[in-house]
Image (cartoon, rainbow, N blue to C red; front, side, top):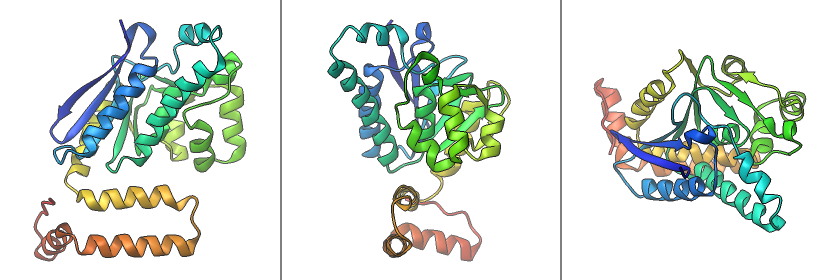
Length: 259
């Protein structure tokens, strides 16, 4: 069977399911293309306010398909470069997507599967989930933005250990380090991710979009630049209809219903 990215909806949440069970939900070009297309459609749909990415069955993703990678060694280097560019375009699309994206992780998130989870805005993981940057185990270096994401979140020595030693790290330890938002019993990651998404869906989408943009920009901005961006987003959101709804609801002690 060909790897695919299944799409379903749960209320205002789009659920994208990595599906390649015979290859442990390994990632590949088909999934990258479908992922970018799904986010493009979701961005333009007012009916979708959040996205959850989950793996089919009892694991998230084993990362790259090793049989495909072995075959690619017989191809020109440009062939593999194009494949990685496709993955990176999807990672970029997730980061730039103006709505919250949540990874729901059961079982293993390995290699590019771990990178994919790191690209999301939230990670919900079962307490028996394991994460591993397995690249060095097969004499490869990371892709999918792993070195970028980890270096911005963790001390250099720990990033070096994760990437060079290729050892498993538990969901609980990543939670303690601040990389996993919520830890659940086994089998409950998706349901907990959907609960998180439902709470986000009740908040003003324009405000969440501004917050995501500000977070993305903060890493390479000076304080002066970031203060100016915060000012501009704040003023824009204050004059959005949702601010009127939210402030009035707070003052009247009622529940706001954003547009």
